Amino acid sequence: MTGQDWVDEPLGDELDMVKTLAQPTYRSESVSAEVQAAFTDDVVLFGDTHANLYELDRATGELVWHVAMRSALPGGDTVCDLVVPSPTATTVVLNHGGGELCGNFTAYDLETGEVVDEYASLPEGSAGFGLASNSSLWRLGERVYWLDSGGQLQVLEDDGSSSSVGELPALLPGRRDYSVSALQLIPGTDVFMVRYREHSDGSSRGGPDDRNGGLLGFRVVDDSQVEEVWHRPLRSLTDEANSPGHRGHYLYLSDELPGTVQDMAVRGGPKLFRLRGVDAETGDLQNPGVLVRADSMRPGGPGMPGFAEYYGPTQVLVAGEGDVFSPFELSDHVGFTSLVRYDLATGAAIWRWQVPKALRAVAAPSMDVVSITPDRSSVYVRTSVDYDNRIWEIDYETGQPRRHWTLPATGAYRYAMDFAETYLDDGDVLQVNRYGSPDDRVLAALLRTGD
Image 1: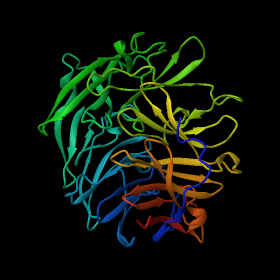
Image 2 (image 1 turned 90 degrees about the vertical axis):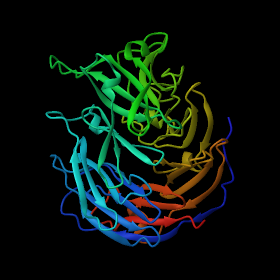
Image 3 (image 1 turned 90 degrees about the horizontal axis):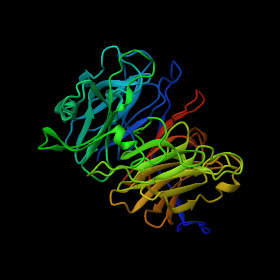
């Protein structure tokens, strides 16, 4: 295994500070756990946890405009997705909602911040998880797609409106009692994948019957219709041939791990968490996949990847064509001390990069996979080891670090941004203070690598 036990750190530079944005005086506590950001050639946009949307000039970091977001749903305003539909778009589109429910769309003029369109995709009488409106927006080429509450595939237009592309339930003849609840774009391909379920009859509190659902793979053809690529009923996907040792009827799609399915298995021993890739052309599940013992964090246990944490894979990116990059936590340490690249088909760890000094850290080290280059040559990772915050460029193939940049550690910026959400785009770094307290003076910062 390459990429392990790097001793001499590569040379690093401090990121150039372009501009910091002062934190406003909030009248209430945080209303959303999410922070979202979007980049264009000219501006940087982000939504904070207090229902505010900001646009910064990318060259100078100066504030262009700021608006307060408002959802018609109870429970505050959650930022679900924030996208600029295409390079020629005149709007930025926000998918937001209340609490755990997404589906309110608001389009803002990129130049002024004025609202130019508003619409919703919310089924009547529904709330919580398992709704098409809660699915993420997915970019394919220069277009952004999403699912409405009726299973219609929609595409965002440059003016912020949405146009129907095709009705997915129509690809399931005779299955009018089924609804679509999750949408993904399989990385590195033009194939979308949806999870569909049977409607609940209301006789129990268990929700839809997953045993009669399945997965559907499709393409968008001629920009105006959908075409089936494959269809795999859940009963066939969870039998012994396709899912050895499968337990229950659990088969989960995660927005954070596109192109994969997650389930639980028992194979002659303890219960296993299993993560597998889906073949874009056939819908076949890759076996054996990455297998993690459910008790891997027991004293003396082997530890576990970040995607196997009980709260979900919030610190993982799938790079496409069968790879998963995940922070790894040892059982006798608190926090993530290494980055592992896994092969989804074999379950093998291709390489492991140990974060320098993480094993000797006093405070729990943290790690986030920030970005992967489109040509799959580099992986960018943000680490915090005893409040020493850095962004590392890691070679995609070998796991060797090429260089790193140190985040500023002086003045008001130092402590406010220790746990900030970090975004990287073509050498520009945006940090947003997700856990801002009344004493923090910095809300966000735009920095640059200087390359």
